[in-house]
Amino acid sequence: MHGVAGILRSVTTSQPAIKAAPAELIPAETLSELNLRRDGAGWWQLAGHGGLILVSGLIWGDARLPWALRLPALLLLGWGLAFAFCAMHECGHRTAFASRRLNDAVAWWAGVLSFYNADFYRRYHQWHHRHTHQPGLDPELEDPPPTSRWAYLLELSGLPWWIGKLRSHAAGLRGDFSGRPYIPAEAAPALRRSIRLQFAVYGLVLLLSIPGGNGVLLWQWLLPLALGQPLLRFVLLAEHGGCSTAADVLRNTRTTRTLAPLRWLMWNMPFHVEHHLMASIPFHALPAAHGWIAGRLEHNDPGYLAVHRAFLADPSRLALPPA
Image (cartoon, rainbow, N blue to C red):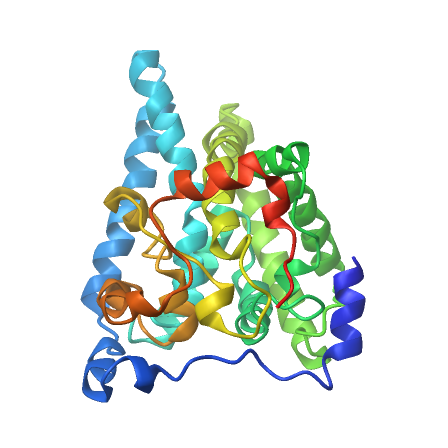
């Protein structure tokens, strides 16, 4: 937890991460077009993601179907639930839809599905964007990255994530946001209410499942979510892992060229440099933005397997390098 102390020491003196001026990379007229928020794209994406969760959940939950069909559905359900994080992330930026209220509502429910709290995450993530991959400032570096194969595999298992989430939610339920400078005191009551409401939803689902004895919270949510976490950890570790700690988004963030189904499931988050450089650009416009800036990226890697082969061969690559 040395990172939290570093944040507290540095917050009053450090400057936000330096970002290349988008106008230097993309013509102003094109940038203005890319920044347009279109409800249609958001609804199509949300409907597809929700449909994946619904259909795979129905197949997995139907004991009459053969296991050869149910087990792949279980995995797809897990990925759909875990990657609801990506929906929460995009709507947390309030760029998926034109309406702020709709963005916030979708983000909150996506957080419920993925075991995040969207209201807490929005503030946490703002600091991540402001101080991207800078030790002592970026809250994503509160816990040091894995630097051994065992620690790397443990990270991919999702177990550290579960432990961290349970501790964070427990503190939030108490209204304890100490050591988190990105949570101002005046925001704490609203965040506590949001987290308590989220756990009230979990409690309600649990109570409703007791009469039927169907264990829906376990079998339709916790188990699939646990199975979906390793793939989410796999892609998130690549976003900044092994990148420079310089205050330069073109160097401290990685774009990963991957398969279209995974890009879709991630709401185009693999275009991660583009997102950090121009966070106001909606997810559906990030591929077009990539076409303009691809030649300027230090990390424009050909797939997650290539990135992780390097990590697995030498986990010390994940150690925070000098700026």
